[in-house]
Image 1 (cartoon, one colour):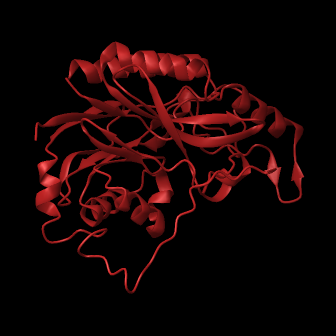
Image 2 (cartoon, rainbow, N blue to C red):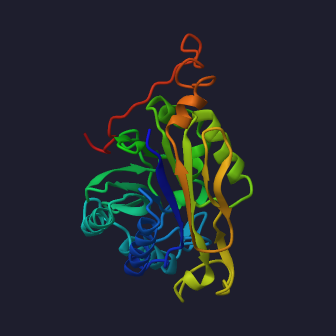
Length: 306
């Protein structure tokens, strides 16, 4: 099969500033296209923020007025799906003839969701994945996705999907994606710990897929002046140090991890590598034991009122 070049844009948000962040997305998409990438993956919650260290004025049993105002900032900088930002990103993908996978904060009614959006080189919006399980304090400001947004798109460059941050530690979700034949396994994240790289290597080997993980590089200078956190954050403090990477189906690192700052990582991939890797291990095929194990996935939407 023909080889494909993929890219990861390791950049940070301008927190709660949708317009400035979108301008950066446009800049780095153009950089990826200039490198002849056919796919560019952006980090979790990039537009407009992963609110690192934010308190939103919450303690057990109480929420402050200042915290409610901080949530209002977050809400106002979020993305309607569909909406003008989706149209803008679709046009950007079409302009540069590239697939875009990007983390956004989606505004659904009056609830926010951590969401990944998918766009095609034809300038079309393909769809979304809402994070199923926010982690820890994320549950204060994000709602929960359901099984109706777990897509794997069959594209000319491979079967494309996304699993967000610690969803990657949910074995049943991973198995669901493997069963769809995912080949380009995108993993937008906010996890910058040393343990993230071996997690991505494990998933690449387990699923025999290319894993493309994007994390932000975020500093105190990216925060608004009135940012509400437990401590004052110096402008030069690194809040998220990156660590983005691209992993081969046999587990070796093709690009990254990078902790140096904002950067573009690229790698040339060959989907035939997946076939060769699955020769001796196909977790959703000959290496499965459906007589012993089974997994049922409910993909129906779950509205609060039917």
